[in-house]
Image (cartoon, rainbow over all chains, first blue to last red; front, top):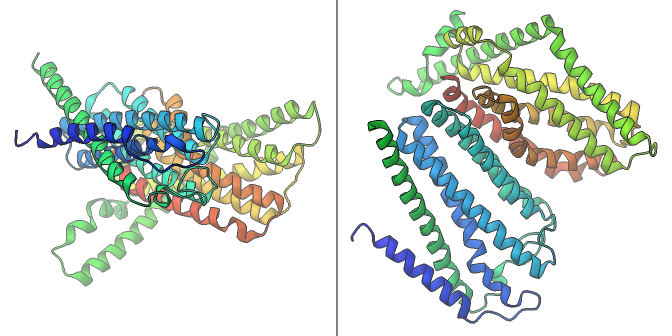
Length: 221
Length: 254
């Protein structure tokens, strides 16, 4: 029980996010209308993705310092969950863009950057699957993981700021801070970020443990 | 070769016990040795290229036939290409040329030679030498491509020095990111497919900057307008070279 308090916290936070996110008061704004509630579901996906990919890169660095099967499995599973969050982020973003920008995909730099970022990590999965030997696969995909993350940073954080974008918070468009006069958005937003990110870590944790057990089974069989 | 042997065994980070001035002297000495090693390795690469001219000639033929195919497929309708199309096609030709040219930088070396290098030189020397060598190769190919392309499809460039600068940055940028990727891909089984899959997402940010910068040069805009792109390109290059420098030893070990 002592070790699992954060799992209970995750469930409580997510229940709070869904209930409060759907029912609470939000600022009435033209065009945005009720879609502003997407702030609680779309934005946390990207926070979660970046944090989980950071964990994946950290395990890759640890692997290169001192190789072990567990570290490789953690890096791989974290990258997969990061991809899941990225796909969900793109889907929720496209749904939102349909109602506010008029198109699912409007060739916005932010959208393109996210798509290329996902391509990088799909390439990581392809690279992993093209090695038969475990140690070589682990080392070379760790090298690519670190290299790709270094290439991802300018893509996500520098390029969108140099170009005009329709996305809130870019190209002179206000982010949500401008509408959030009485901090009611923040009251749900921060728990949402924490809840979704913890959910991601929970998934990584369970899947990695499963993979490690499976690995041991194969070794002993 | 004693130079290289010395270098392989000496590592700055392990000398913490020694006194500070001596360490800095030693590190200076080592970077000098690394520099020499890079020069030797590059000489070897140039010599190899000179002896086996078929590879370089093959790339030249690849560039010129691609340009000619573009000319034929566009020329049937009208003789004048729109400026954005001209620019985009030019960079796409260069992208594919560089992926093909750099892909062979690790695949062409046979196992025995790689093992020989492994025993006598440091991995950092190898990756730096390969990056510089590929940058030179790409620069030559890109310049020839530009001359031929401008000759065949017309030359709408208004600010030629700026356009040449963007070609130079493109050659350096392609070689920095593709050299490391080709090292990774050469370890895998289906390396030529993997090369394309791994490199395109990584190179896209660079390509976008390059296209924008060369578009400014094509339109003859004020040079200050391209400063943002120029600095970003340099910064991305720095990141990529640093990461390659740190990571290549791990790749090299296998």
